[in-house]
Image (cartoon, rainbow, N blue to C red):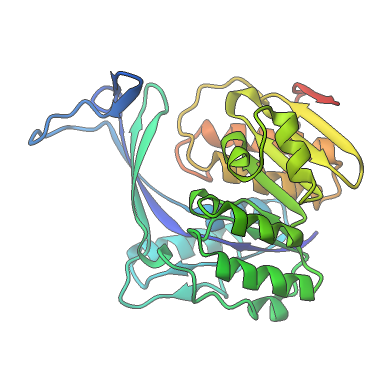
Length: 322
C-alpha cells in the first residue's frame, strides 16, 4: 500500500432535508431553490450533521483502501473541529499535520437538500478553511509520501506551487483536482501542470484552461501538459487519457441510480481513481472503480458515507478504448 497526503479543506456539513418546501422554482432558464416566503417558519423533515471538504473526503477514500492516509488542513478548536477529528480517527486518517487556527471557527456548510430530487444549495462559512497560506510545504520532507493529492485551496496558487516544487524535489508524484478559484487564473494554473502526474477536471473546467469543445479535443490539449488526464462530463460519463501507456478511454456512468445527494461526487471519483491505481489496478480498472465510488457516494446523504473500500465486487460499465 501507498502513503498519500491530501491537501484541502475540512468542513462540517449541516443538512436541512425536506421533500416539498425546498423544491426548486423555475424562473426563465434559471431556478430559485426553496419555495419559502420571507418571514415564514418552515418545518423540515430531517437534520443531519456530517463532515466534508475535499481534503477530508479524499483522505477517507485512501484510508478505507488501507493506504497510509495523511491530511493537511485547517480547523478550529471548536465542536465542529472536534467532530472532524473524531471521524478522521475512526477512519484511520492521520491528523498529526492538521493546523488548529485560533480566533476562527471551523468551516461549516449548511446544505439545503431537496429529498425528492437530490438537488441542493450550499451556504458555506469558510472559517478556518478560508485561507491556506499557513500550510508548510516542508511537511512533505518529514512525511515523504508516494503521492500528494491536491484539491482546491481557494485559488492560492502560491501555496500550491510551493507544495508542487517541494514534491518534485522529493520525487513525490502529484494528482491535482483544481477548483473554481484556481480556474479563474487559467494561465497561472497551466504553468503548474509541469509538476502534475494526474489531472482531474470536468468538461466545463477543461474548456476554461485549453481550447476545444468536444471531450477528445480537450483531452488532447491537456495531455500535452499532463501525462494522465481525466475529464468528467456528468451523466455523459467522461474521457481519460494516459500519454505514457498510449491509452484513451471513453466511459459512461457506472450505474443509473436515484441520487440522494451529489455532494462529494467529484472527490470520490478522483480519490477513488488514485486509490485503485496505487493498489496496482490497471488504468481501465481504476476508472471503473472511480465511477463506482462516485456513484455510491451520491446514493447517501453526506460527502463520504458511501465511499467504497476497494473490496466490493463491481459489475461491468460502459467503457471503450479509443
